[in-house]
Image 1 (tube, protein in one colour):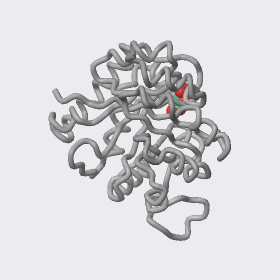
Image 2 (cartoon, rainbow, N blue to C red):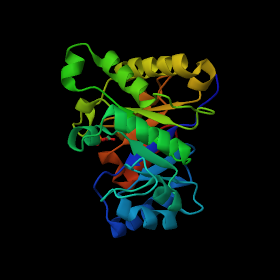
Image 3 (cartoon, rainbow, N blue to C red):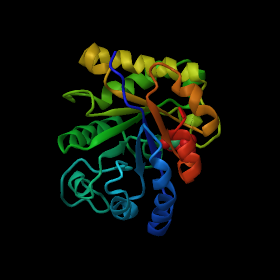
Image 4 (cartoon, helix red, strand yellow):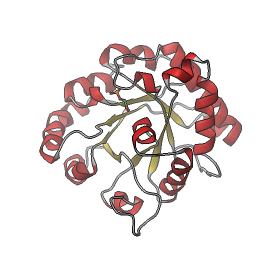
Length: 252
Ligand code: PGA
């Protein structure tokens, strides 16, 4: 099996203005040299440019938290993939549960955005995950695999590096309740199996699947010990440089 490089992505959500972004990176960049995993930060749109200037040459990647699927047009308030390319952004988070819940993101819009991101060479981090109610009714796998299938409707991939998944149980986001490593592995293993049905075993082994939801320095090691978990999408704990460093260097 080909080794997948772990990815730790910080989802800053609606936190950190330009100054706070620069201050964070000033603190984080010297620490980053000791990290062998890939690191990406996803600041708000208004801080992307400043972050890009700061990380140039460091090997750290940048991502946006959302985008429109069209390259331009009369879409007030939206940001296009070409605008993200210009920054440049390597990644874009697509279909985060907060966007599905508060901003009418659907499996269909997720699918359009995934296609567009891949077309423009931005790697989508596609978020899927079940609610507490769905989990309690035993529907976790059917809900999550259905989201995966819909996100990938008519999506062609080249080498498996063109997309990343993040399994984020909604009940674990920002709540302090982390999924148990074996529960996370069960769902992430099932996602990989679905990817293997869609794209074949070889490509499925190259696609990275992250866990997200209350990841902290205290729980990352056990999560990373699971065979199919390839890193984390980190919200709250990515806002502090030292804490995020501890998560991303779990192995050292
Ligand atoms: P959290 O958020 O780490 O604060 O739980 C994760 C996310 O929403 O991506």
